[in-house]
Length: 193
Image 1 (cartoon, rainbow, N blue to C red):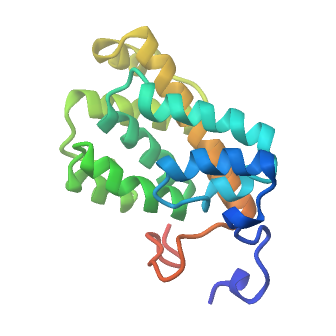
Image 2: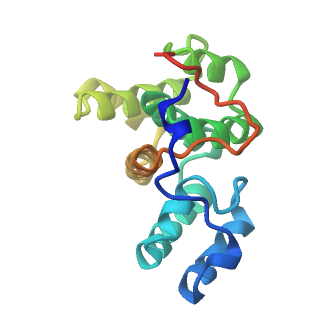
């Protein structure tokens, strides 16, 4: 049993009707693009609306204006979601990754905690770069050279920023003990490594 289920949520889910003017302006922007409405990380961000707006603007760039191709950008997000076992990140982004062209096989292997076997060169570069940067806290010359073979300088910077951004999102979700929408199955089972 989930120990958090027996106690009130750290941040009860806000509704649009509860938002003050500053929060409402941000909430209206969020609902235009979010598959989870003002849930997930947005529920926390709305409690600090100035920060929330700045983060939303960053999210906008990193999701829709980044130089990294969408399938690879979503792959990077899923790598972070898997590392953190972030239920909401995985729930929201796995369908987006598949829709963007990331194979179901890669998604399934990543979800199982494995380095996917059948990756294209650019996918392997994303996996190795993001994984090494976030686990070793550095990028070796070999991994950097691998990334440089397939990405521009701007893409490497954007890839680094998306990984860091989604670590922050995972942290917001973990701190607030956010979960998937009611009635939906969490992607990671209890005790799943």
